[in-house]
Amino acid sequence: MGEVESSIPLAVDMDGTLILTDMSWVSFSKVILRRPWTLPGMLLKELTGQRAKWKRDLAERLVFDPSKLEYHAEFLDWLTGEHAKGRHMVLATASDRIVAEQVAGHIGLFSDVMASDASYNLRGQRKAEALIARFGERRFGYAGNSKHDLEVWEHAGQVIVVNPERGLLDRLGDDADIVFE
Image (cartoon, rainbow, N blue to C red):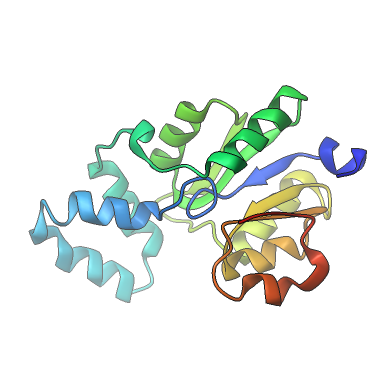
C-alpha cells in the first residue's frame, strides 16, 4: 500500500466487515423474539419505506455486549496497525448510531461514527455522498463487504474488501487494493 493511501482517512463498514454478522439480525433476534408483539409495527415501517425508523426502534430496545460479537480478527489486527501509524478512521455503517457507537467504543480505534438514525439510512449512495461531503472525492479509503458498498468504492481513493459476499470480487475486478477473505 502506498503512502498516499495510508495517509487518507479510512471509513470502515460494520456489518459483515468489522463484525461477521449483521446487527439488524442481532437486534431482530434479541428484541423481536423476546417481544413478538412489536413485529407488526416493524414490518409496517419496512413496507412503508421507514427502514431507518425501525432500525432506531430496535436499537433503542437492544441490550447487547459488543465484546460478545464475532469480529474479523485479521482485519481488526490490520486496523490496529493503521491506528498505531496515526491513520484517521471512522466507523461508517448503515446500522443505527446507538448500536454503532457501542461497537466503536468497544473497539477504541475510531475517531468518529457515521451511521443511520431515525430518519436517515446511511447505505449505498447515501453513504458515498456523506463520505464525499466529509472528505472529498477519492480522498478516503473504504472497507466494506457487499454489493451496497460498490457505490461507495466508486468514489474511494482506496478500496478494501473484507469478508466479501459471493460474486463481489468478480464485480470489482482489479479495483480492490486490499482483500481480507
